[in-house]
Image: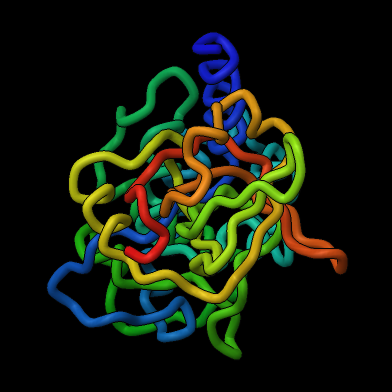
Length: 250
């Protein structure tokens, strides 16, 4: 059983490299969005030079190596309802391949500005700072939207068994993007325990049986996994499941 659980988590971690993460805690500045002119044109040009020097040999001068994931609709599918910090962290911890973290944080944030410029988000008078990126949301110009399908998410709700080996999350929070598919710990766990229940419902795919859900029926639980939206109802391909309270009333 432990081997099956580890396999689920390992698979989720591999895919999560291409998916953004959940929001981090707030910094000193108030919340902004990528539509508020959060970087300068000069910074984007510096970022392009840094990208060409450190990333282009793998990803191409035109970002072709990302298979379109950093341009246009694909960029928004992968990063909307997240923060610029998640994008910065993704680049900082993966590029250049085999040498992650080998350039300065300033160069990494300049590369983020270059990506924002490539996606035609408006420029401003000031550079994108290294700190406070947690407070800059990536979202559609019209405002926040539901997390898209195939994102790694966290939901908190009441676990029920609909029929043998068929489980559902009810009175659940709306799906929120996360980076780490493993069980929450520390402050994140305490926040999950304190989160109020919601009104959403999610079917859990059958792989959840490898996580011994029978022991958590009727509990308030945290589930993490890949969100699959459909007209028949939203589902979650679960990577981890943990009890937050033995009562769904909490």
